[in-house]
Length: 360
Image 1 (cartoon, helix red, strand yellow):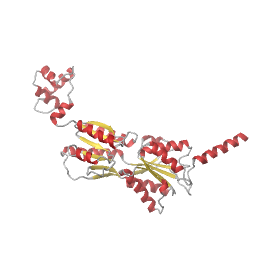
Image 2 (image 1 turned 90 degrees about the vertical axis):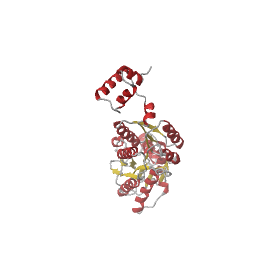
Image 3 (image 1 turned 90 degrees about the horizontal axis):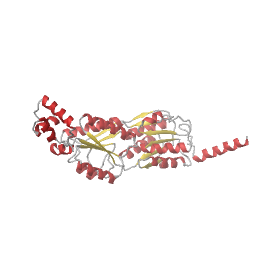
Image 4 (image 1 turned 180 degrees about the vertical axis):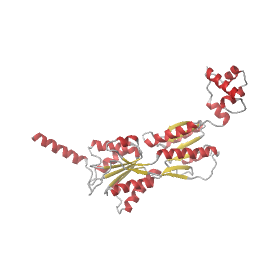
């Protein structure tokens, strides 16, 4: 049987209201009384009921973070930052995974309303704008990484146009002219903006856009594998691939390994968003860093501001965190257009070597 606040009050020989004020740190109770009540509550094993407290105070002390997946290392970093910041302020973070699925996102938002959350940081699918807008009337909301074009919610974004531009320009400066791009869906903020940065860099360098080198898809490893095969099977495959869809990176690396393509000797590889093992990989993988930690900190700052101000509309703004290029070892200088080795050429080479070995 659970210990109630009434049990604590009886053991301490005080009223229930006095016990409540002492254990919540509110009201006029002496420090000595508060310390005694805390000690008695601990000895009895009393745990406060957060739901009942939320109904009384109008605050649940729960803040939700809704992201698409945890495959993306940036989302992992963001979750760690948000949880640490909120914990320091006495909040608990509810981590929700939406799978980049509109229906799952909608169901999750409904559940969060039932839990009376005090705030929400969301990476939106862009398909539930009306629901988010309705929820924002009662709950402070900040969008992260993506903009929901159907709402005017406060939004924290990476400078994806500039990041993709810097990455593409770096490959062009290394001599690459046929640069494959694997990017996110074009109905998402990051997908559209990263494509725009890539196109801008090509245009400034006088390189014509070639749509056979551009592939967009869902944010998952299989997208990378499928797109990499299409690029490498072209009659003139690219000499470099810019993977601007972070989750797709794993699929690209799987295909290059399957085809025994050496990076960067056969193919230069540049990826968007960092993860720890990119630096440990051999060769270390060059990346465009979207500043995940800064994005998360800014999103928390803006959410707390809205929570402190009673969610008033003090001028909705869009904030940008700068992206930066980190050069490692996966991109090389080329003097002439050298196509990536296809699966066919590698296979033929292996058969030729095997035949020579057999004759010897």
